[in-house]
Amino acid sequence: MEYSQLVSDINKRIHDPPNKSFIHFVPPNMAEDPVLKRMYKRVSSSRKSVANIHQSQSLMPDVIKAHLDLYMAIMYNEDDELTRRTKELIATIVSFLNACKYCITHHYEALLVHWPTAPNPDQILLLGTGAGINDMEWKLVQFAELLTNRPYSVTSNNIEKLKKAGLSDRAILNIILIISYFNFVNRLALATGCPLEPKEERNYKY
Image (tube, rainbow, N blue to C red; front, side):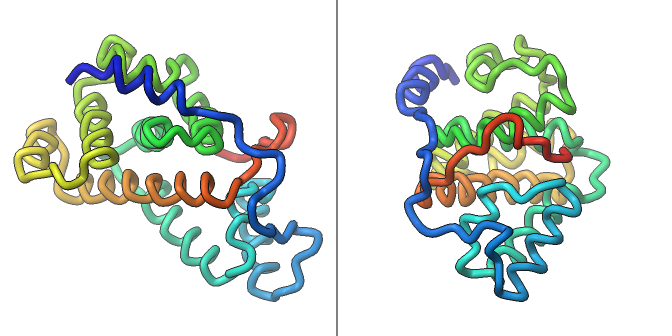
């Protein structure tokens, strides 16, 4: 599929996140709810600091726990078929497709940790395997675009293509979950007006 028009349209839609959130975020130093304090401690102990996307759910502390559990289960599981590079590639591509600059920034930075020469996501969509990704990763990028933009169009034929690329049913499920998760979290970031942390504060452990 030719993505040049899609990429052009997305680049026109991407905008900087707001400086102030649309709803109230409880910062870590103001947390009083015991569940929220526990979740903030959990995040900061593993990632060094609490990103604004976690604070965006601070009015519903139990949701943060469920969110973290899902994120860790799909992004940090022991999977011999899907590397962290591949997972962060899909996270970045989905975030780009949704024009979510907050998540593009975070996950492109994470992608660079695992692939230091990674092109920008728009170049990956434009160049395909010419951007330095392998054939299996390109099929995953194409599937991510389909499931994000036209989920009603997914058929067994699309899944068979992933199987022919060498992916097991479990790995395919993991990819579906990652794509679905980032469609969720992109919308969370955009709709809550999640501000982007200054670069010097984004010293997260990826």
